[in-house]
Length: 156
Image (cartoon, rainbow, N blue to C red):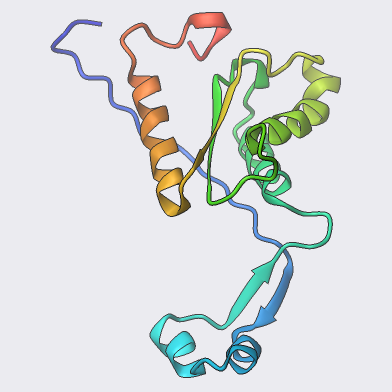
């Protein structure tokens, strides 16, 4: 790429996973002694989702990533990174994204092979809402990188 050329990068698609269990914000307000009107009218909150017993940040992330892969017909062998923005970790010794990657490998191995995410880098960016923003900025810089994403079978 020439110095004066600018590689435009951005978001082509996104997916989220929301748990199917909810509780009423009115019930929360009563239980916590909060003003329901501040929550409902002030913030527009009426119900709050909560994870089921078998759901956590890793399973929710895996669901969202799988939706993106399936919807866009992506080859997992060409996914270069999965960076996860989170407020907290499941495990103090390794990134939650490694659990997500393991679930994705199990899902796609029958079609793409056991090492289908071999070239995928995973990292957690843990810092409340800023973690997701940092993960996005870091990944945009990675895509924009002058050497391209040809390393280890990456995106190109």
